[in-house]
Length: 212
Image (cartoon, rainbow, N blue to C red):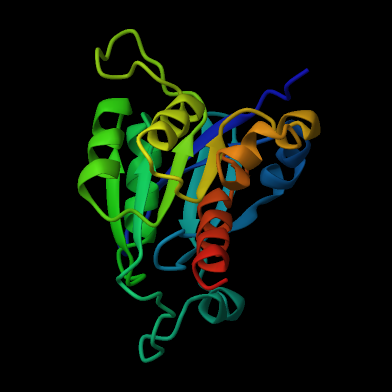
């Protein structure tokens, strides 16, 4: 049975990045006391606290928060721009989170909302890695006719066996991850978007794969 999580949406006043946290019930007591969260793009630190009307979000001003933020003079690690990443997600906020997070990464990032846009990018751009949400079909979008797995199968049938990472808002279950079909589709990992820090996990996974 899936654990019900509560969504907290944050907009960073420093860099305007918008991102969403999915908070599981066992984290609620911690948030009632106040928990530190860092912006997925610039690293700015915040104190997030649950209150009677929802959540209050205040900048953290202590020394630990300052230490958590990257120094302005420090160069950010980057990957060679020859790497072209295709991000496929029908959630606008998820796309914005990833787009903001990769702005200064040195990667060339293409964003697709549905199967039509994704397959067009695969066939016209030199995509080196695909990141796709697992569930993409949407009756309100005539071009959203395939889920992530079906897009990878179609790309493979067109002659593109591109390494990929699957993202999903649902809980990742071992017997799904271990299915041999993912090996055949060149899937290299799974990222659960329910995690508060899923974009950072995704960045680490992408850099691991591109530098392998």
